[in-house]
Each structure stands twice: as C-alpha cells, then as structure tokens.
Amino acid sequence: MVVSELITDSVVLYSGYCHFVDTMSQQGSRETREFCNELWNNWTQKGGSGKCEGCPAHWSNREDFPGNPETRESSSGHHPFFGYGSLSDVEVVILGHEPGTQSIGKEDENATNYAQKTFDDARKSDVTRVPVGAGSLELTVPLFNTLSSEFNVYWSQMKKCNELKSGPEGANKTAENQCVGIGDDYEGYIREELTTVDPEYVIGLGTDVDRLLRGVYDIESLGGTFSREIATGNSESGLRWLTVQGESFKYIPTSHPSRGVPSMTKDQISLDVPNGTTASEHYYQVLADDFVRQVNTGTI
Image (cartoon, rainbow, N blue to C red; front, side, top):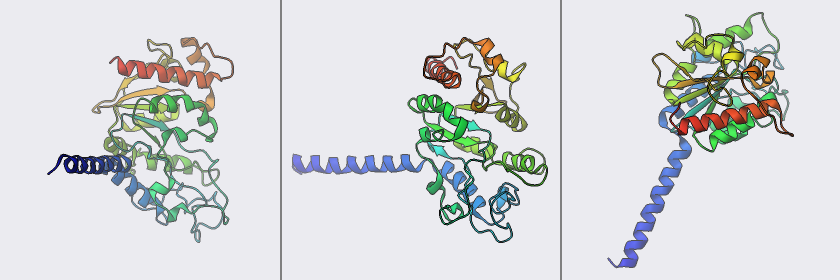
C-alpha cells in the first residue's frame, strides 16, 4: 500500500470513529436513555402506566385541563420536565421542585399533543435553555451557564408534571408523593433516576426539593433553618455540601429563585450586587463560581 492510500484510509477510519463517538455522545448513555424513555412511555399512555398510573397530575386525568378527562386525547401542550442537557457522563444534576402552571396550554389546533411525540421531541439538549422564559427560574441563568461550561449537567424536577391549578383536595400532594416515591404506596422515579444518571453532585433549588429528597434519602442534617444554613459554608456564597447516606453523590441545597434571596441567607453572606443585575442572579453567579472553584481544588 502506498503512503497516500494509507493516509486516506486512516483519515476515513478516524472520521468514522469521530462520527461514532459524536453519535454516542448525542444519544447519551444507554441506561439513562432507557430510564428516560420508560418514564416518557409511562406518561404518554391514557391514564398513565407504570409509576404514572392514575396520577392526578397526568395529562389525561387532570381536572384543570380543557375538555372532559373521559374523552381527552391531547396533552394540551403539556409534557413532563426531565432529562434535559447531558445524558452521558453526567457530573452535576440540577433539581427543581415541579413545573409551574405557566406551560399549561389551551386545547386548540396550536397546542402540541406531546402524548403522540417522543422523549427527544420535548427535551432540551442544551441545558442553558432550561431557565430561559421559565418565569422565576430565569434568575438562575448564571448558574446554568457557568456550570454547563465546566461540567456535563443534567436537569430534572422532583415532580415531573405541572402543579394542578385546581382539582380534588390533596391532589397535588398525592401527585407529588407518587412521582417522587414517598410513602409505602409509591415507588416513584427520583431514586431510580439519580442512580441511573449517577452524578457526582446534586444541586437542589429550594426548600421543597430539600424536603422531598429527605423523604427519599437519609441526608446529613443542615442543623437549623434552611435559608440560613445553606449559606454557612466557608466561601463567598456560603455554599454547603451534604453527604447522602449510602450514595456516591454530594448534595448542595440552594435558595429557590421565586422567593429571591432570603434575608437569613443574606445575613450569612455579603452580596455586593452589581448594577444591572438582581440579588438572585448575583447569588447564583457567586454560588456557581464557588462550586466550580471548590470542585477544581478538591474542596468538595
């Protein structure tokens, strides 16, 4: 074989390998994709199947969606929120509490029926798009942008479907417990999800995430009031990390954007907020910078 042919063949092989690696990267790990598709398939079924079966927050069971649940065929633009960002080699998971009511659409010809779509039709592969246009969550843009520039970041919610605007008393609580897996009657998704995704760090947004995680895992005590204790670490943002019994990931509780930066949190740290930004945006930027620095120095 002449040198030119050898070079050509090598280039072809290398290009094929790069295409294979890129394809695998886009597809994510097989285990994570299997989990995500199983959850999605459970949700698309009328009435829900598997862990979604009979859930009052399911698109076909809800009383706050247009139309009669008995005859409803469309999800009215609604879909569960999970599996955004990286699906392989995940280092950081960011967890919200639950989607708000703002993404619940009207049942008309313009509303997408996600019950007829696939998981990839709904998910955002670019995790930095998660907070954009998402109400108060948009204040966390600095956190998402900074972390995604340094790590493979996966986004999910403790409860995957939107909160109910109306319905039977206690329906939201029932849906939350069923989806998360709290109580003897519910297996839920979060433990399987975090085991499958296998992150090194889980960052929770707010007290509700903390409450629900503690309903599933044995987590080191914060030792006091949530909004104060999350900022008692030795850094500019007061970042605290906690151990989770029997798990390999570290848990970092943070403030929820809809409530701003609580006064107790502010009392623990000194936020010199620049002009043109909010206290919340600055808090998440400082927190993100602290997190990156502590991970890179082996502090966390």
